[in-house]
Each structure stands twice: as structure tokens, then as C-alpha cells.
Image (cartoon, rainbow, N blue to C red; front, side, top):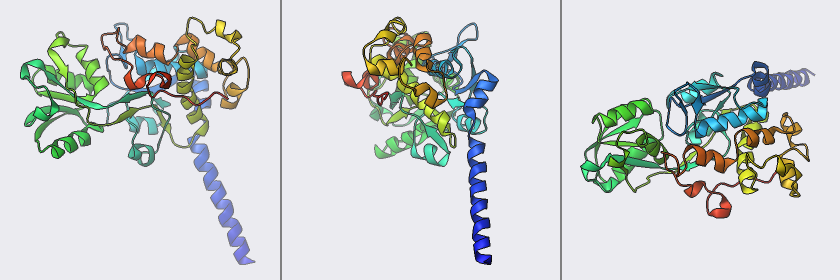
Length: 341
């Protein structure tokens, strides 16, 4: 009898503990709705990706995905707050509940997903680490950088990638540690380092801010895989689902030809998947805990994936990035969303 009673107490205690743990991590959607503002952990400023304009309004590729999330959850893409962070502080701020979601140039890795207790939600930008140098150095390849001084952001995957690459090629370098992209820009332009290394997209973004961008080249070697994507805290499956499908909604919209300009017309489409995407049919919104027009609001207010890309970092912008791996799977890229059904 005593054994059975002990087993019962242990079982009840375990359930109670699980309940507390689950409850502690849940409720982000309710918190955001009650607050009326979505808090996105972003960078301290990277041209084309996340930066405040002259009026202090945040813009960019990452910011548009933050706004897309606000459009889905609050019905208004303007209701956001940018929580700036460095490579060292981004995960701390998210896990400390200073932000609701991380939309930032952040690489998905095993240790971050498992050890830091984050949940990642797809790759919204496929990238790789590269090197930028001034043309006057006469360097054509990363394998010519032996002995160079290199600016590198601390708390990032680029530190280990850099060390591995130079070790594998029998080269040495002098690390110039920096905290933010702006600090890297100042050190690089000021001659404190010969080379700046980070994700290739970040190099292109930084170069676009120079007074003489044509005098700086990004070397051909890409030395790593850097799949960038949004993250949330462990323990809130509903919120994880929302962030995941916000991203997928933009990709599906592009694949189906749904744009800001034609989204209203597309509500009368004969394609069942488009009708489910836009909330005309199905109950996806209800299942997420959102309104039926959550994805419609994203596309109407922000646009599809291609529109977000081209507006902020595409070939017609100062950043000048081609779609490449970030094109749709139907055009040879890797952007691919599961079906809306």
C-alpha cells in the first residue's frame, strides 16, 4: 500500500512539474496580443537587412519578416519593436523574454538549436562565409591571406570557421575582434584590419555603405554553410507553428504567383491551395489561433518572399544580391515550402 501511495505521489509530482514547465514556456501569442506590439530581436544594423532610416523607422529583409509576423498576429505590420542585439547578446535577450522572436542574420546550428534551447523555423536565407578586401591589396583568393589582420565579430559561427579554414590551409592570421557590424565597418575602412569576414550577404551589405564600394571585392571562396533563419524559445509549440508558417506563407505566395498587387483578385482563384492560403477556404487560421486572413494580411501588407528579397537586397538595390540558392525550387533554388493543406 505504501509503495502504491509513493508511486501515486511521484506520478502526480511529475505531472505537476511538466505542467509548470509547459506553462512557463507557453503563452507568447497571448502576450503579444495583449501588448499590441511584436518585439523582434534584430541586429544593431546591417544595410538591407535591418537598419533604421533617417526617420528612425526600421527597414530591411529581416525587418520585413518581423513585420510579416506582426501582420499575421496583430493584423498590422507596423506594430513592431526592434530589440537590437549583438552576436553575443541575441540569444540571451530572446531567452530572457526581452523579445518574442528572433528575425536576425543568425545561422542555424546544432548547439544553438539544442544547447541554447532555441527552436528554428526554416531557412529564409541560404548564405556562406566569405572575405572582403580592398582592391589595392592585389589579393584574388582567400588562400593569399596568410598573415593578414582580419576583422571578425565575436559570438558568431565565423570565428570557428575562420580558424578551421586557416588551419586547414596552413596559414596564420591576426584576429581583430569586434562586437557589431558598424564597428567592423569602421575598423576595416580605417585600416585596422586588412580583411573583413562574415556571411557573404553581410559583406555585400557593408560594402554598399562605403563611399567607394567598387574599390572593394568579395573574394570567390565561400568557406562554410550558413543557413539563416528565425528562432523562438523552447516550450511554446503554438508560437513556433505561427513563426514557421509566416515564413512558409511568403514562399508559397511567390510560388503561386500571389503578390501585393493581385492578392485581392486571387481570393477568387480556382486553385484550392491559394484559397486555403488566403483564408477563403479551410481553417488554418483558427488552428494557429489567428484570424482566417492572417496570410492575406502578410501578403497585402508586406508581399511574398520574392518581393521582400528584391525590395531590400536584390540586384536592383545597392546591396545587389542575386537570388541564387534563395530562388524558388521551381527555378533551381532551395526555397521550398510544405503544402498548405
